Length: 288
Image 1 (tube, one colour):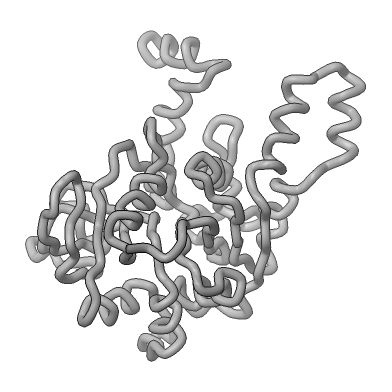
Image 2 (image 1 turned 45 degrees about the horizontal axis):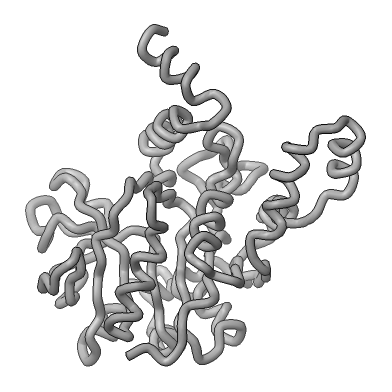
């Protein structure tokens, strides 16, 4: 059984976003917007909706815009108040109140596992959530809350998974798991970017995780890959040799916004749901 509930989340955002150049030459990829909201805000809102109290961003020197986005902007607030734009002002203030925000710089790009390890002292001896900054998940129940519930049940690390077509599985980590019911699986192994036709299932790992303190311990002692990186997936490989770990096929729609086509799909689908322009946009798509 779990020793404590999940109160903190790590979001590594130190990557260069090269797949979206030139748009990301001077702005973080996580700040690319879906209509009028940056990707990173969707992720933070999911965390807050699940009851997470502290967000730990792992950043780099070109990610200052993320810090500014979740901070107060007194001049902007003053001007909105003067113009009587109370609704917009409220939206701006709400962003800063979503959680407590902490920022830690990753000294050099040594992989997602190294980035997560940067938060070890802040997390302490607790479980925590991990979000990758490319993934938006829409649904009634926050995807990370669904993983938290599985953690509460088993007291073990949990990875989020979603079914993907066979011709796309080579882009992801894929689990081989034993079905334990209610959308959950005990993970027997994970295959990183399997060759065509060699995936152990159709369940791809997405950027949602619950990790436990022993994952930090493995990361701290993990040998780097040939390209000098410490990777979370390799820590999982070591962990499942001796401990149970679980995967959960969450309910909701996954948008892999690190992929240009999926980013456009997210723009369209979430644009259709937008409270201000959704109806008009849907009408336009039907009769452009």
